[in-house]
Amino acid sequence: MFRPFLAGVLALATMECFATEWYVEARYDDPAALRRVGGLFTHVTVDEKARVLRVDTDDDGIRLLEQAGMHVSVDMVRTAELRALAAPPGDLRSIPQFACYRTVEETRTDAEALVAAYPELASIESLGPTWERDNGPGAGYDMYALRITRHDTLADNPERPRMVVLASIHAREYAPAELVTRFAEGLLDGYGRDPQATWLVDHVDFRLVLHANPDGRKKAEAGVLWRKNTNTTNGTSCGTPSSNNHAGIDLNRNWPFHWNTAPGGSSGAACNAVYRGPTPASEPETQNLIRYVAGTPGPDGAFVGGALPDRKDDAVTVAAPDDYKGLFFDIHSYAGLVLWPWGDTLTVSPNGEALQTLGRRIAWFNGYTPQRASQLYATDGGTIDLVYGQLGAPAYVMEIGTEFFQPCSSFENTILPVNLQALRFAARTAEAPYRLGKGPDVHSLAVEYAVEPGEDAVIRATIDDTRFRQTSAAQPTFAITSAHAYVGRLPWQTDGGVTAFEPVDGAYNSTQERVMARVPMNGLAPGRHLVYVQGVNASGGGTAGAPDAVYVQVLESGDRIFRDGLEIAPD
Image: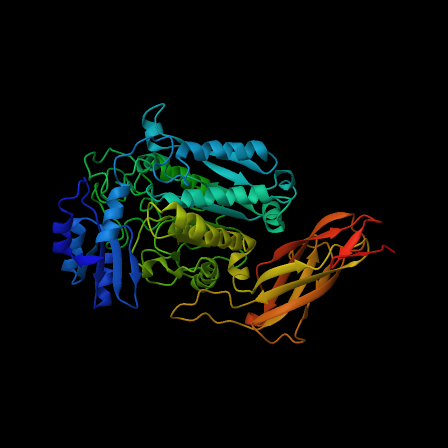
């Protein structure tokens, strides 16, 4: 239910609340109005076709929208929901009204439990203290990352690609931390049972920062719309519990690359929701994250010692090598977006085409809008601009869901499943995201039956170049040209058998092909074996896509064999 702004004020004036926040719709005729106001707000959703901006904001924000020539109305239902969620909390042992989201302490406890349950696959890595912990022993938190990979093979494969994921750097965004924690649990609980989880843990080094702003998150767990960290050095009396304006520094405007470069991309006012801080990387949280993700700069300016390698010769004008290993995600809510650099300029980055292609593939899984970050509104001092601009790593923001305090029903049933798939797909490209994102996906992998020693496994799959979230500028797709199975090894490893698939319809001539192969399993011991499958499309003379894997069960000699419900006598 929408009403004009003044009518909405009168209707809500008698509500018992301490909030000054409204959820509004702002309609505009001139797209330039959108660019003028977009960076002034912390979160907006935009329907460009209908020319509507939606945002939760205060009275001052509404005035800014109207001054830009927009026609503002209040969503009464969403405003009431927003204020109800910000009511004073009760028992803080868990997040009130949101049982699906773990608190900061519960997340840490469960991360440690995963390490205890899977010591050969998981570990906790310390990042350093938060601002509160740095300024008062016993206060605040020690930041950490949950690292997941197969530890006993690291010495033989130290250069395996790293996938770094930050969650909830903005404190009030409940869903990201839970999404990444569930992602970790799925990888570990699926190891040895789920072929995809197994091969990813074997061959990708996951670095997951489950809470990138724990001090602020603790404030938000009390139902406060707290966004920033809790540094009170530059102001202590900002805002109300349900407003956007609180003390602290916006940690996603505090990173030193492209800091304070874009008009409206951040604010120098301490109470503003996008306050960038007094200096670049002023905050302990920012310093911890940069040191962990990128490392520290040497005399030549190149970063060393971080999770992701520095492979960019020039931070602005030169493309990173297309064989770059690893990728980076910063998970936020809300807006339904997949974003990539740059955030502070509409200029396309040197790796812009590859970033766009992979971004559109990722967005196929969650159905979100893929675009350069600056196409939404200007941001400076953000995470992805540093990670891409300084290191050359493919870097993405995913804005998941539809609310800061996302209801558990929509999180569990809609947001969680599709974004787990999106993260899994991204992980499958980690060996070379700029290259593998341009090739076709492989899905619907199936093995017809377990095999006797020396018998061929019949494997079927679909090789698909259409899995893009198409936007107004359509993504080109290409015909499939081939597909191969690799027994016990990834396509880029050297040892192991290779078998070509045949198209079921007799010819490789479509952007989607169902394929089948009889894969020799001779010489393999009884038990389960991973078989990897990868497809190739016609782009660039032949481009391979992200692989996936399936288990083939090799039986013991003399085992009873059933096919189609009938027992087959062994030879």
